[in-house]
Length: 317
Image (cartoon, rainbow, N blue to C red):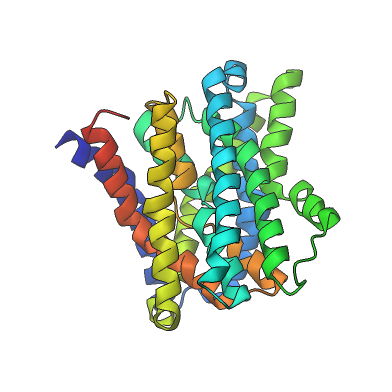
């Protein structure tokens, strides 16, 4: 029963915020134009500020924690392994290359920032959330590099990799810049006045509720019917198969409690919203990319509940 309560406490706030977004869309308070602008604000400013503050305020010992470094290395290797296997195998079953690239991205590109931090803080509080920011500061560049490679291979470029383009997309990504600058401030011992710290934390705090409201407003289930086979296969792999494999690996290598919750955020959260924009830019199937984001976001409310309940029942978190 305790595990059930824990799972409800994690999922219910996320569900409520998404329902608010759906309601606003239904009442025409939000339209596609508004959603596009809000997404830009979120990913270019609010989330970058949140990640900066989480990294800036964390304990320097978290950065040097061997368990976090070990977990980061394990997850990075898992990402590279999963993408490599999918690049080799999936084209044998999915002949449309524009769909193939989108599905591969859908399998591994997690919404770590949007789901990882709230889930972690729901279970362990905000004091240790700096550990998640350390993970994010490494994983986000890895994810962006892999996404750029996958979409270059399967996109309109016809498989010609542009390393300059990949490097530029990583360096200019605000979600990479935020934690990296925060880490720089932390290491150099640069401190803001308390009034500025509190203001920046308030600004960064806008990101999670606003992001879930916007995500709820984007969900339109009727558009999923056409590609349901591709979507169901990708979502099943994203939310259950891939996380299960990585959980087994991490558990076998001694990861427990906070570390496993970070694995939950990194591997079992739904496909990131940014995957839609990247697929569109690369000339891949943008419609399928958006549908995978929608479907995985809806299904994740049930899958995250199931994962938290399962891990809590066996005292793993």
